[in-house]
Image (tube, rainbow, N blue to C red):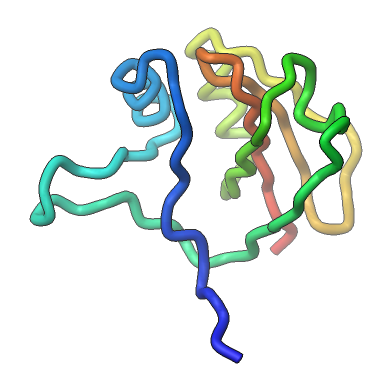
Length: 121
């Protein structure tokens, strides 16, 4: 059977797409799709990716009835959290250490939940 090799894009609606794209670029280093085919796109590092549908009634994404949450892998959770907090962004570090790594939660300016994951190496 042929299988997909990874996530090729994440597309979602935003109240202010330009401003939100700038926030992701500034704080998480994610470049949005370029305006032409000659400019480079954001490249992910190879690594594990979780794909998990949740029950419609889940609270896992936090309050607000959001329909999605993105989990971003990071090399250093401590460094990323310090960087975000220095920029005035609230980040909650999960105090538990899991068999697959450590996690933290934050929200983008439109209230979309984000999870940071530092996998065990």
